[in-house]
Structure formats: structure tokens, C-alpha cells
Image 1 (spheres, one colour):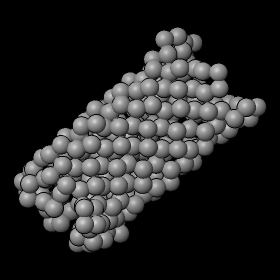
Image 2: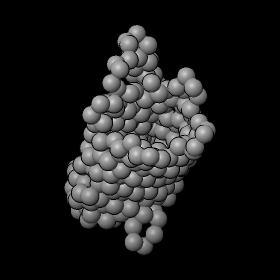
Image 3: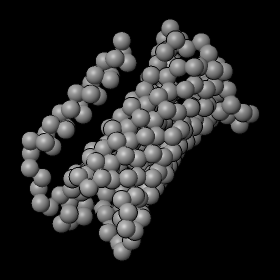
Image 4: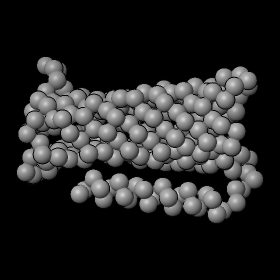
Length: 239
């Protein structure tokens, strides 16, 4: 039921955005891009002695980017959510849960001769919840900095994309009845190829991987490294 509610909420969010874009005239000095995302992943949890837990989770999400064509500043919002399964290792007893990853960034875009380069800074949150009769939550959040690049293939509608985000200092918490906290860091990388039609529709496919490093969390086996990775597929519209 929780999964159905979250998917309905995401669908309402997307439909609202699409309707808004359709009804409103596009400002002459701004560019919009909306993408829907499917990201099937494998998540692993490990410590210095090796991996001790894993699961699979299929993310669905949305990606909205607004760019001012006159000032080159813009805003990028991204949200992905999933219901995990196929639990393994110490997570084999889990009966359900949720995974969410979201970020909001302010960026500046440089339109160079052959590429578009964006530098950004913002805030992000990575959260894993697994249920063992009682919810167990591992969450890392903090400010992030990074860059992304789009490299069009000359005389075609194809382009290559790459992005890198670094969370230099995350606030990490583990909750299972009580809460313990530590510092940490994280990275979020992606690489893809994209095709865009003349009317603005686009498709994209690539690979994304997130790595979270926790500090020592009292009363747990951590410090730990949590890796979330897998191919992703987007469909979107650019105007």
C-alpha cells in the first residue's frame, strides 16, 4: 500500500508539472527540462571486513531543470523513491522498507564551443529504511558541490552526459529504537547517452552509482560503506 501511495503522489506531481508547462507560455529567456526516471539498483552495505548486507531496489523519480538563458543561472531538482526487496545478509529478515534520494542544486552554466558545462552547489539526502518489526533507518544528508557536462555529437541529435557530486561532510544517523549519529561523506556519479527529437522529446540511458561512507556509529558495526548502483533510463521533454 505504501508503494502505491508513493507512486500515486509521484504521478500527480508529474502530471501537475506537465499540465503547467502545457498551459503556460514559455518565457523567452528561460529553458525548462523535465525527465521521468527509472533506476533499478543493487544496494550493498559493507565494513572493513567485507560486505554484510544487500538488497535490490527499483527507483522511480522525476528530474526538473530550469535555466535562465540571460543570466546562465539555474535550479535543478531531483527526487527518486523505491520499495526494496530481495534482502540478503544481515538484512534477510527485513519485511519491507523504502529508499529515497533527493537533491536541490543552484547551478551556473557555461555554453562553450563544443560542450555545456555546469557547476553547482546544493543540498541532498540519501535515506534507507528497512523494517524488522521496528523500522531501521540509515540516513545521510548535507551540502553538495559538483559539475555536470553535456557533449553533443556534431551534426546529430545525440549527446553524451556526465555528472559528479561530492558531499564533503554529511550528517549521518542510524535509528533503530534509539538514534546514533556520526559524520561522513558521499559521492553521486552518473554517465549517459541521450537522443533528442526536433520537438523537444528526449530519451536517455546510462549508469549511476552513489557511495555513502559513514563514521563510527555507536552501538553498530559501522563505520560502513553503502553503495547504490545500476543502469537508469529516462524519458523527458526539453523546451
